[in-house]
Amino acid sequence: MKRSLGLIVCLLLIISVSLPLFAEGQTEAATEGPKVINVWSFTDEVPKMIEKYKEMNPDFDYEIKTTIIATTDGAYQPALDQALLGGGAEAPDIYCAESAFVLKYTQGDASQFAAAYKDLGINVDKLLKEAAIAPYTVEIGTNPKGKLVGLGYQATGGAYIYRRSIAKDVWGTDDPAVVKNKIGPGWDKFFQAAADLKAKGYGIVSGDGDIWHAVEGASETGWVVKGKLNIDPDREAFLDMAKTLKDKGYMNDTRDWTDAWFADMKDAGPQKIFGYFGPAWLINYVMANNAGGKTVGEGTYGDWAICEPPVGFFWGGTWVIANKDTKVKSAVAKLIEWITLDSSNTGLQYFWANGTLNGPGGTKDTVASGTVMSKSNGELEFLGGQNMFDVMVPAGAFATGKNKHQYDETINMYWRDQVREYTAGNKSREAAIADFKQMVADNLDVIVE
Figure (spheres, rainbow, N blue to C red):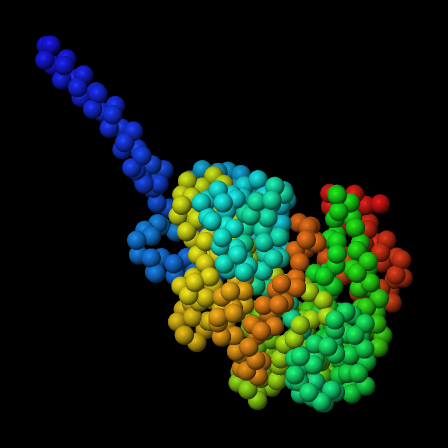
């Protein structure tokens, strides 16, 4: 009996010594459950990136459970919010937010769920510097405590996208270095250029929405300041700019994302249109598909170029965020770092910039990393062989994210509707502003004075 007791004591001592050592040596997955990463997005873009990462890193043996809910009819955000609030094994480990509502998740009502990149173990300061990330994307992704919680992979700094043949007809050259000084800097020069173009029978933009993204993006202050509605002087001036465009025939008075707007990209409108404001995605995924052809010489394909805009702005983009309660932090960190901060030739952004994510011959795009774009080939046939990165890198640095608010999408809709009422002659300038204020007061948690 004594020998048995002694043996039991020895075994207990061995176990008590061994357990802590075993725990220290365990992997994250072993201590915290199955090797599963829940990814939420509104498109399949980020999930496909993660598939590429897994293909390149066979030892990354995590199961990726993907939930994709389109933003159509506002379905994505409520579902994501419920999943974040519910927590548990089904909660998102990684989730995506687009520019229209990203501030809600990085700085606003749902920012409490976001993990600081540094808390995931990412060397943020070093990688930001190495990658030369566009400042606006960092500003958008930084929470009120000054911690980076989200970054994008795609740069959406805007350029002015113009017709080479029209530039030659009006000014004798299509050189971007010359054209940028014809249309800017500043809106006064832009409207002088509009007059020059009109004298030759051309419109400078398709509709007032084409300048709105630039006006909104360049304003010093946003729609909400300290909880109160704020109409920045630049945004208020859009009323007058839009009316000038309409009254003087400087545009075809289209509304963006309508058939008439697309038609102007291939010269199918009432007058030929000189240009559009937008980032690389507008060129690659919208204009190239509506140019009336697929190769140089067909429709307007190949007759375009880009230059720096009169004012700096960005339009669109997707930010990648981690859940602070994720149980697989190190794995999540690897994915987020590879997507948003890796500026090497094997990082996501290098593949994305060169159109090689799924093999050669894919669509080239601007990326968040200026370092990546500086060593990549951004030449596009659509732009007559121009290297878009030469313009888009400074365009990204030109843009700001300091004038954004989580209610922007809704307030912008109210504002633009009232601007159209004014330019159509249905309301006075004062009535349009008053009705805009009333709509904000009636529908949003914003103080209106």
